[in-house]
Image (tube, rainbow, N blue to C red; front, side, top):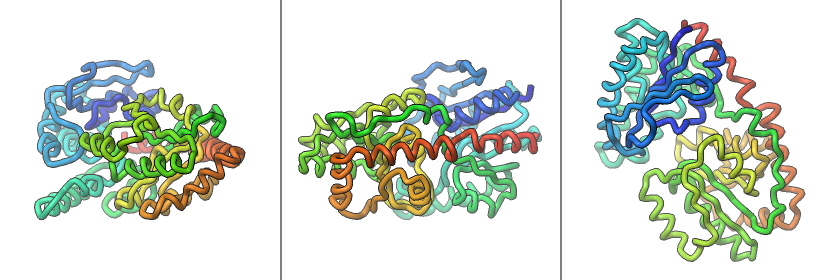
Length: 384
């Protein structure tokens, strides 16, 4: 059995995309070992999942989470810590998730003549750009952009999440495939009786930050309450950076009883949270990395039968129009413009229920993991 080492710069709680890839490859006859960075050493050091996937967490390089120069400075220590573990397990292929693990994978693989697959969940340079300030930030951004292109060109193949990113990576690597952030069909098996409860429950799940619409959701909640709609906002995720939590509390003064802050929810449990909601929110601000991509949570909302309110970015708009599952929102416009539509849903629940059902059926028929994952197996066969 060929051994695959997956490198990951978070602690794998688990990471949904990594888990789906790992378990499918395990079923396809590979032994998968996920070597991940537990920056705060707060999880078990080693474990084996029911699927047979093995997890090893590096816990001797302590760091915070988030993105910034402090975290970037710890990366070389993480890369170094990876090397002896790779030497011990002797993998046949190294699969690097996101750019911050790619130098570690190439460092080992090129010395031992083995293939490397780069799994680009996001365009890393644009991901870190908002956190980099001043002239030094500009230089660091350009350095990261150059470094990603350089290292990606030495990868044997690249896996990415949408056609926009694939177009970028094909400029410097000839073997690029797309695996979209689609959920598994099993998450879309159960319908959702939205707008049948005494409270209108809105949910946002994911990283909690202002650029991901955090304050806009509070604005929408406030407007609906002023219109005498018994609305409630549920947040599920981690504040990135952590001080965004205090900014939210200050901005939402007086609305505390109308907001539930659930914290991070495990991937296998999040569907239960969605089933108790009525609307899925993903009104991201027009940062370059958001405009070009489709939010992962959109597909999770659709799978759970939720009508959605999402930013009117081109790639996202294409899916909303195709599935007819929600409303496109201009994140820079006055949210009071969308309020009448939500009020009309409250008065006529058949409309949002149909939109939610449209989204769920679109997941079952088209936007699901099973329809595309064999591309990854074929990529492995081509490179081993």
